[in-house]
Image 1 (cartoon, one colour):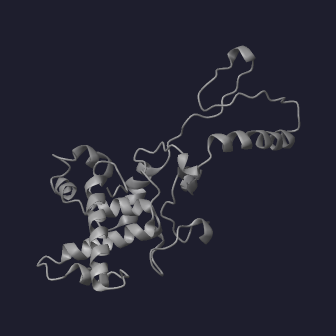
Image 2 (tube, rainbow, N blue to C red; image 1 turned 60 degrees about the vertical axis):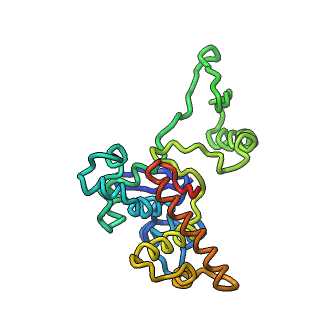
Image 3 (cartoon, rainbow, N blue to C red; image 1 turned 180 degrees about the vertical axis):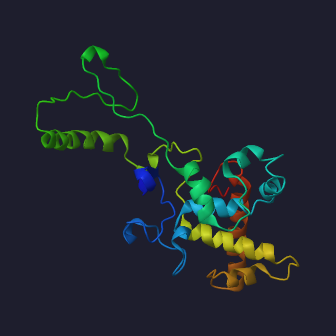
Length: 239
């Protein structure tokens, strides 16, 4: 889980890395690898690509041009007009509230056994509060860790409470490559570029031109699928 501290000590939590800046006290080990050398910090975040792929959805852009009416009006109420190129402005004003985890159930205290309520995904414990606090905390961690690990064997089992949860772990390098291939194909309005040439322009490695064309086609199709699915709240679904 990643944390992003805002002004007035408010903290937002994210399952995946949010867009960091140079001001964030986060080590390089805790940041996703950049999609290319010297890439801006925000391009290391999967949430950036949700915004970037949504900007390629022509139906949603048409909704923005209509002022948020018609098809995708409900989505527009959350994401707003994304035609401005300033990602961080959108992120600060809108995006981070869509992707951060909502405050869920907290720890409850029952002062008597008769008040205790057995709940799914909860553990009931009896804590002797007359003990030293440091000792209690240490003992609590020792007891809860095996229970936690047994129920949560895979960190990706975390159920997101975000308003717009990511459907699977975003691979930044792959998202970047697919986006660039799609944008190159889109810009070639006259269809002069072959798939092999589009692949070359975007650094697709292959043993020969035919293989490069095949790989580029797969990446292009995946990008088109992501663009189609992003308005359905399925990101980064490439199927």
